[in-house]
Length: 196
Image (cartoon, rainbow, N blue to C red; front, top):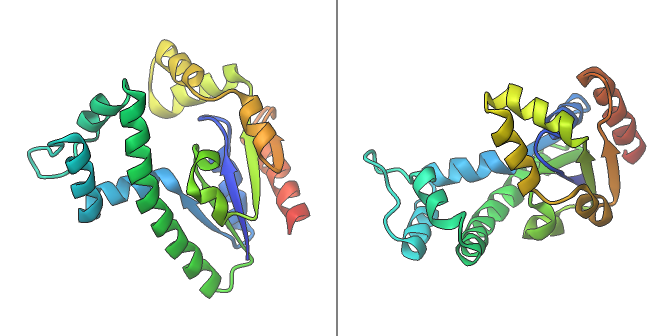
């Protein structure tokens, strides 16, 4: 089974790329979803986070993501500590999902992670693909998708690593400069068929 690592900044078209993997019968793993599910269900992860950062639970007993964010996002050392804790859990879960896909006889799986290149997940992938798009396009997409202001969308885009970081550190780069999602779907499918 070929395992592709998919990365790139928010709003670039990674989800469209993953849909093409699924259309070809491949398995897909969204690492953000794996992390958020782990925050809800993994008692070991919850305890590690509270041991490191203090009380983080809301009234219902779940980890309060906003409270956690307030602790780590303005302190690089704490953010690094969070990433170290989270990546261990996420990597274990991704490894199990990949084994399941392999057991199902799938020829292809894709792991989507914005921090793929900095994480242990990169070691699980045979090939990496950077999905990039012009900043103005990404801002429009995330405003529409998340219902956020243009200023906030620009702040998010500018806080992420530059395109060159992704393209220089991945095996392939796919530029999403298409006028619509269908055009990019065709471009993604062509790359996937070449890889397979």
